[in-house]
Image 1 (cartoon, rainbow, N blue to C red):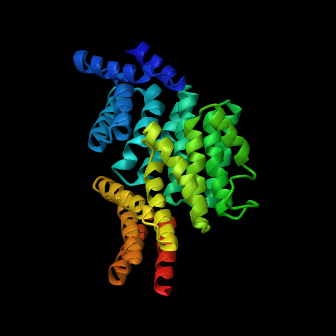
Image 2 (cartoon, helix red, strand yellow):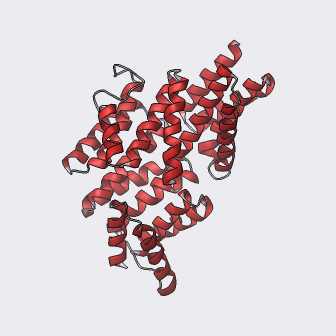
Image 3 (cartoon, helix red, strand yellow):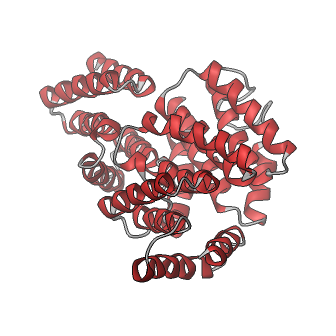
Length: 348
């Protein structure tokens, strides 16, 4: 079991197709002969696979809970960072409020550093930054934490993870007005052209995806809808290819829908309506499992759709529900966006 779990993460790091086989083998042996501490890693990885490739959120949640229990039962602190990176980084956000993952990821980072699992301890730190950013944490405070973590990652030569944090940090800097061009991720933390070229050449799909995601979000916030759509299209292609299980996929669908509805009103081209409808359908499904994260996003998409269709009473109601839902669950960035879009609706 120990050999398989070790090989499993080596194959994952090397992007080997053997990774899936080893995950399934570890789960199979655990079921057949009984669980041990290494089984927690197998069950967590299998749950992560279910939440992404198989789109089985309920099954993923069950395996995630099992893996956490096994870590606790066997007091396997040496596996905490790996298991938490998989469970709280890719499973739990689909079934509970996003900010609930912050403390477990922070704890896993600290435990992993103490146990010498540097790679996954710093991966947990990166996931903490991602979830905190998407939860609406104060940007000034979060940006300083991102810098601290990226400096530590640089020190320990975890360059791939460091680059992911650099993207998020530069996006935060852009949102705070600390860049020359708010639409381009170039400034104190990174150079977009250089990092994107590096990601494409090295086939670092996660980094490439994150750059496209944040570029599309920034372009939407600053009203450059055509650019936002272009960046979102690149992101969608990578999501389809990699079956990413991170919560950024949910925010991508959210913004892709908003971008499409904005372009639908602007151009009248019905192709944008089909993209928006697809986003609404995805959000309806995800709302069944984590309404705290998704319900207000769904309401805002429905409000924008009703706005286009001329259903003013329905649109006004859904804008109000989106604002209230975002406020209740403390997604202040979504609350602000909902207020802004509601104001545009009422002004017309």
